[in-house]
Amino acid sequence: MKLVRLLAKHRSLGSQAASRALAGGRVTLNDAVVTEANREVTRFDHVRLDGEVLQTGCRALYLMLHKPSGIVSATHDPAHRTVIDLIDDPDRETLHLAGRLDRSTTGLMLLTNDGAWSKRITEKAFGITKTYLVQTRDPMDPAIVRDFARGFYFATENITTQPAELTLLDSHHARLTLSEGRYHQIKRMFHRVQNRVTALHREAIGPIQLPHDLPPGHWRPLTPAERDSILRRVFNEVFDEVFDEV
Figure 1 (cartoon, rainbow, N blue to C red):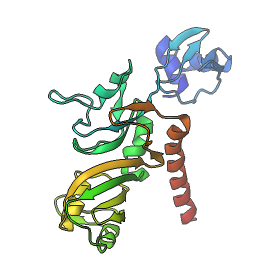
Figure 2 (figure 1 turned 90 degrees about the horizontal axis):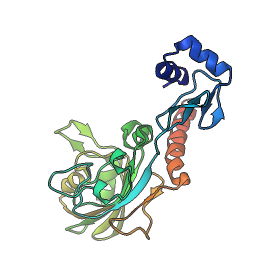
Figure 3 (figure 1 turned 120 degrees about the vertical axis):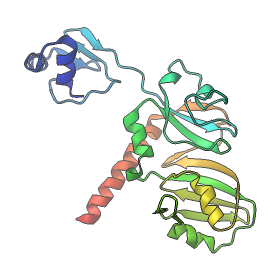
Figure 4 (figure 1 turned 180 degrees about the vertical axis):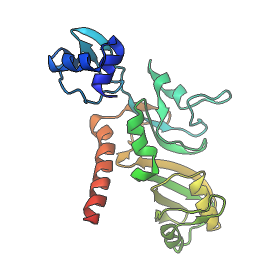
């Protein structure tokens, strides 16, 4: 929302009076005087007019969780524990999931109450990658690396998966990096090469890695560098696309 609209709405000033208040230096945004009427304001910003609080600004939360097996990737579930149940924070009910994992899948999950930030992770257009460790029932044929790089056609959705990077670690273990996250995609891809996934663990979302010292079921806030790395990754991807077209 534009700052001038927030002022006009909360004090019924009207746009002209709100613009005059801004021009007169009577408005602070996060304790700094602002005069730009078109300044964008989020629900996390603290806004005052003549010292009166118009918007307190809520806490912005950016968390990582090491999801254990058996926990549901949801905010509420009537029958099972959810990832939200693992978060010990007074504002946990404001959180939503920036991507999900199957109940049996373990590893990195990101939770936030910042919808604009989570969209950069979940929307396909931004192409944020996810990296998984995969364990299979049968030995993997090295030839399937090319199959994953080409993509698989799924008739149900009438789509071909985006190229995926599969690195074989040994006969039954591999590291897989995807730029999308369709329904049971990894299990379905391995089914197409006549194999079955017996264990799946997410190591990373874009540049954010699951730390080795974060035990299953535990969580911590993202560092500012981790939080901002998602924004930098998206900016760099968009910049590279524009540069390639020039």
